[in-house]
Image (cartoon, rainbow over all chains, first blue to last red; front, top):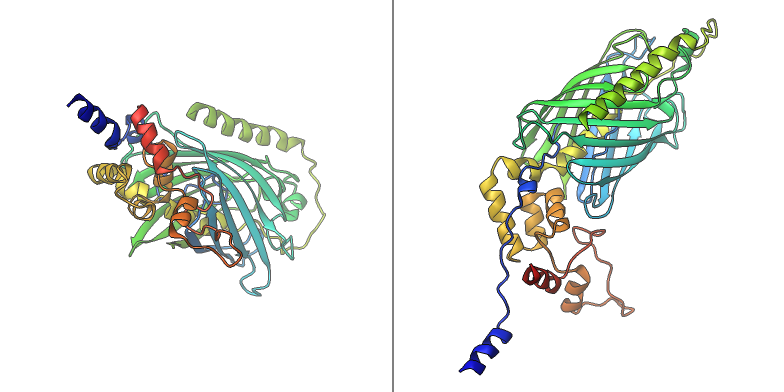
Length: 256
Length: 149
């Protein structure tokens, strides 16, 4: 009898127990789905299985009365939690001629406790550097969702912060700024704070490296396709540009 | 962290503000008026990517905590495939659970080996599943890990 019991104990595989969700995971605050920045990058990015398409428009170009627009599309690869994520994008920055393309790339990695880091480049391989921002721009950025306060539930005061340093458009002002006596260089350091004021809605304050911006962004879901809508005011200080401008953007993402 | 971030932003702004008067006030160097500054690229490029990535986390993790717990339980017991888990929890949250050791999936190589599918030259075909760069843990290893706990 004892042999049978022992044999049964040894031969019958142990039942796999269900894992409880640990408390730290229940309390973990992750970013919401609305935009957390206006013109600066964040360390959150696309991963494998997602692609995006978006467009943005500025009410006018600095020092000019004409409007300015941009169309961007891209997709993600990899896994930022288990390895690294890679986001690759294409940008059309001259909508009237539709001939100035550039590329962007971002490698991002989720660390822990709502923190992520990324390095990337923008405006790469642009045909006309003056038409596509400040030419090649490279950056390092760290993003974090404040864990100390706010709720892990959507819509209750999550605070997202990002800080980074970059070259190109984060550092160099435009030639017109230089000729207007506003200096040649910005701060190179950039950052943004996005506070969740409602479900999937953030109010954003941002320093782009050359000026201050503020805006609001929200994301709506249409048949599981998130559509992000943003409205912002740029050039709030006289550090660059010639007055406040209105920006607007819309974008959607698909999962596959 | 928040304090450090605010301090960092304040320092960045201060450096810029303090050094602005030191910049050479050159004038008269007229340049091409068609100088553009960054259009709202981040509005167009990064927002949707974030949205797509966090659908699962935002809708299930907190808003419907009970369902989140049920899905995690089922996944930890091996009753949900990786695809099913990712569909219900989102890629980001699923990977987070894998990294925390709460759920595990069969390794792609093991799945291919059991399927008996080989390419023409005899090698296993490249894995093209949901996590091509993900570290997968075999179920055997997970069971052993669970027993150890």
